[in-house]
Length: 242
Image 1 (spheres, rainbow, N blue to C red):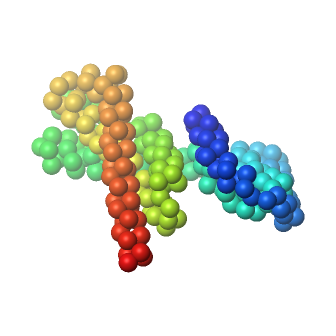
Image 2 (tube, rainbow, N blue to C red):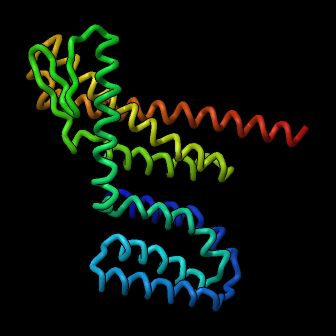
Image 3 (cartoon, helix red, strand yellow):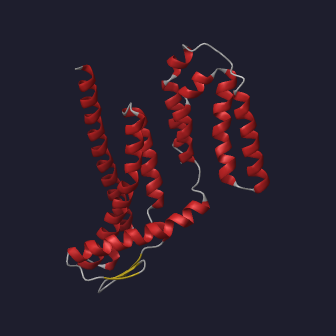
């Protein structure tokens, strides 16, 4: 989350020439966005709903750009401003609703993978019981935090490397199964280490390294998807030119 703000500033800085060439045409419709910001911020403060307060910050930035410079400037910075969403904490409602399904999905698929690899294991909810070790896939291992990190990375890569908004959307959606697959790989690898080596191999530094390795795996998979979309973009441009 701490990297999102400087990255957003950089993304807007990349648009500095485009913004400088735009004539200042203050749009009074921007005050509608200002009113929306006031309503959202007021509702967030009165209702003590942090998520609404955070979203009001994004509305304020777009409103200020529309009022002070013009609609075109607001459209130019819209993507970088939207990227700020990943700076905010995960809303508790979404966190708790998404955690349990992610736990069960990751644990169940890992259980089947271990069976295919002839690793004796029993599943009971989010528990994986090995002959010499019992793994409990807790909330911290649900993968939701890595999911948000992969989604933010996909959003950034799509904005910088793809031109088609449709490709950007599909690429962004692919980040969800990519992150889930990475988490499944981490759980499976941890269980294999515990069974073939020792339970200590599934804890401490090895556990942290498994998380880092699986995140790298998710990034490589995401990069493969990006190469595919770039290939599709080149094919589409060639078809249009011909």
